[in-house]
Length: 365
Ligand code: NAI
Ligand code: MG
Image (tube, rainbow, N blue to C red; front, side, top):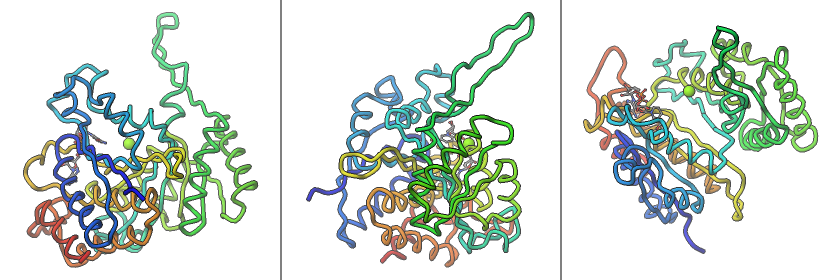
């Protein structure tokens, strides 16, 4: 059998720095766990623009469609701020998401015990927190028509349209129920069915899919504004939350910050299954290219490393290996390893990006 394939797009800024540590971990899995991957590397974002005049070359797009999973670092930076909108680094990432049809965006909010004091909430509210927000990523108000700004009389009017089809809701609901079955079997669906027709349809479709296909999973519904409140009041009441593009954007950012640093947050974006049964998939840290610390060895590689752990779990059916990697991260944090972003107000001496990679590799050994 041929090895699973990975396309690595390290991108700009700290992207290549954090991706270097991931590459060492991938090598470790090949050497020590007999899990070799066939890796190819390519450009995305500003670096692709510098070389090709476009943030994502067609050949790179074609490769992304063929591999079992794409791992991305980060794109963008001040050098590219004045570029035309059509060739901005972010457009490369948006094109990947769009053409791979990655409709299910998984954002875990997990609180490592060693970092619980980092949260803006009290330790006992967040310690041990492990929830997953599933955000619909390819439809909703960010894409719906009509949209734009026009004149009505002598007044400007801005319009965006929340639009969801039944099948768009159904596929992201299935993705959330599947996930819940691998976790503690609970899904909470959030919308505003009290004031939005698209929310009424959302609730109907999620309920129908649940009854027909996932009756074994516990389903609840919540209005998204109450959901925001509950997330900061008692986040541990949730396991999997499924919601639309706009609410998911807000709720996942809020949930993420319950757990501390941006340098810790992974994500996965999944699409429909390919011929081999694996979903189309792109894994990336939540953070950006961090131009303020680029080239200084300060970047925390953990978000990118945990994104690879998600790849092991969701693309390569290697949940036990993902657990192993997450446990190694937990271990080094418990031992006190801290990149600069993880130092509290009391300070301490930070380790570098590479030293964090070293520590995680040592813990894996
Ligand atoms: P950012 O996430 O790059 O940085 C925000 C702050 O967090 C900075 O102070 C940075 O030093 C820190 N930070 C981020 N990741 C870190 C890590 N791994 N370790 C330690 N500290 C870390 O967001 P910002 O500053 O708003 O954007 C910078 C550039 O990145 C912009 O060009 C933006 O468009 C792009 N960006 C790209 C994203 C992506 O590739 N998915 C997402 C967000 C922003
Ligand atoms: Mg956001």
